[in-house]
Structures are given as C-alpha cells and as structure tokens.
Image 1 (cartoon, rainbow, N blue to C red):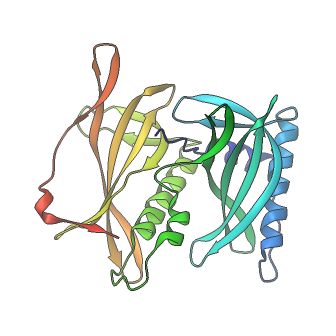
Image 2 (cartoon, rainbow, N blue to C red; image 1 turned 60 degrees about the horizontal axis):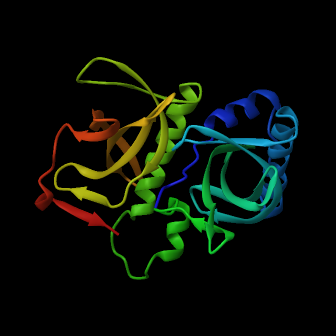
Image 3 (cartoon, rainbow, N blue to C red; image 1 turned 60 degrees about the vertical axis):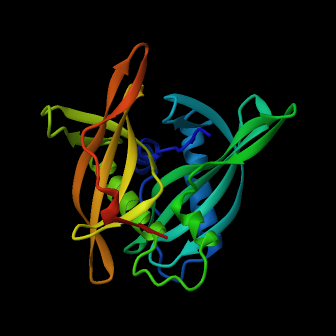
Length: 272
C-alpha cells in the first residue's frame, strides 16, 4: 500500500511568516485551545490560497486542493505535545476525504505547529470512496496499539518521535526542505521527508537505529534511504549519526534504491 505521508513544513513556514505571533499561553492548555489554534491557522492559510487549503503529497509531488470540514479530535502525548486530527474534503470532489494530523507543541508561552501528516486518504472500494489509514501508522497513533508490560527503556514510537523532531528542526532550518551532504559524492542534497520505516532496532554498542525515506525535491521518483542513529542520554534520545543507506539508481525506465552498505542482522534487536 502506498504511503501518503505529508510533510507540512513548507506550509508551516508560510503560516509562521504571515500570521504573526501564535497565541500566548498563560494558562493550562486544553483540547479546546488546540482546536481553536489549528482552525485559525488553517483558515488563515485558506484565505491566502484563494479559498482552498493546499497540501503536497510528497510521494507524487502533486498538490491537492482541500476544503476544511472539522477538527475531529485532539490527543495529548505527554512530553511530545498535542495532535489534532482534522478532516478535509477534496475541492470539487466532496465524496473524497482526507484526515490530516497536526502536531502542535507549546514553546515557552506560545503554540507552534511542528508538522502535519496525512493519517487517512481517499481510496475507491466497490464503487465508493472510503478513507484508508496510512501504513506504517504515524508514531503518535502507535501508542494505541501498545501492549502493557513492555520493559524496554524506549519504545519504537519514542524513537520515531525523536527522529521526527530532529527532521522537523532541520527542515525549518533548511527553509522547507532537509539539506544533506552526500559523504560519498560531496553533493549537497535537497530532500523532502516521506516516512520513517518499520521496524526500529537496537544495535549492540551503537544504540538505537531507524531508517527514513526522503525524495529528491522536484524529482519525486528519486528516493534516498537515510539511517538515523540515536543514543539515550539520561531520559532523552539524541541523534548521534546520519548516513545515506540507499541511493536512487536508474534501472531501465525506473528509479530504484541501491544499498551503499548492509548490516549484520544478528547484532540487531527489534524495539517494540
């Protein structure tokens, strides 16, 4: 199944530059506050775009024009922020709906949108449009599938959260894209974030490890696989190394990912 992960930072930067300061939080944040904040950002961006909310599917490189329907729910993940699940319909095709999750954090006394990801996308089944959940699930929805009694210090969703926060910061610094120096060719790569893979692993002597897909900006058929290495420092995870694991290579008329290196699987343990 294709993943319709949406990396929202380009929109976020535009919002941040045009809406002025986010609301000041001088009191305990509630779900009502998050709903109002997210709706305000969406409404303002919709006005700027002439009546639609445009998002980019990083898998296809195509923009989709959406119309706001409602903020369906807000979830809080302690230590990571708030997640508002927002329903949109495709402009001109009211039977096609998307669910987009907005990641909101409080920074100091303000609310800030960190990122947004498509959680459900429209697909046709037996002649009707239905919403299908992306795979793998965004890390903030993985909590609902956790089983009690796990003893690992860090869970897979926490490792993904640390990588996602790192990527979001780098994208903001890069003006809407992540910039990576290719240690093999010396090329400066300009990439769009797609998704973090499953599974997440722990490597003996190296810490935690996960892979993520990034598409070349403007060339969505070309995909790099980047490896992120993390170690725990007290009660938090820190990115210690990033490497290009796979690079795009042309085979006939299509682009595929080619390994630059491999792993000894016997030294890896999957993190639940």
